[in-house]
Image (cartoon, rainbow, N blue to C red):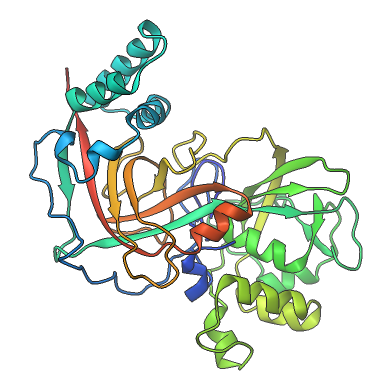
Length: 379
């Protein structure tokens, strides 16, 4: 899920989050508003801890140097990410460290890895985030999708990207998906394959490439106020997919193979509908809920009830023997986004970047997670 302003993530993720694989729901961002459903990650219990791999929580008040894996971190890359993301922080201590970072960048050209490490170790202390029962939390991942589109409809690209309806107000409940799609479009922004538009609406935004190779970004503009309903379960109940074959890729392939009334009837099981605004594609990354562009592999979506935008966070998530896991994830990230499925003190959605490669990796992430807050010093 990403829409500008607030990570709406009617999907966090989505090729697609593992969240999609289970519930076809998980991240996105929308303009300065409370998060609408992101890729809702599936509501399943967090993985059980493995004492052989899970690091012991770091006591409060210690240096970041005591964090597991700290010596292997790319401290310069983390510093650069902080120097951008800290601009959204509002508390006095964060502003103090943000000003220190700006001064270091101005007076040291270039900032070296050792300078960056010294800055982080001298400017922050560590506080472990914990779940109520002390078990690990959950890390999922999301990405910014890219799709083909057309300026005019044809037999394949026959679904309009619709703009925000006139008179729309946030929170209003409108017609369901099937009713909206039945109405003739009068002001389509672009035309897409039905299954691609469906997935882009779950994600909350996407990048479009047209037949002349020009590109644009479809950003979240509005929604119909209807609840998000995953289609994976009803597809298995109807015998359309096997119970163990409801990955995002499998769902997309089925919708593409049955494009037309059959696929539309299945997609209509999710009544939620997203409207878009077309914006230029600057080649960068979408904004998170904090209002600044996300940094690939250095940004996470968090629960704002437990974290603040701009928080510097250490994550440690071991893929271990998880089926399909490609890697473990450990390092400094910034809390710059949120999503309706991201709930709890040890829960994060990791932004992988944009495009198919990022999406494929995002779909393999469902890792036991430990998190530590790096608390800025006030001097």
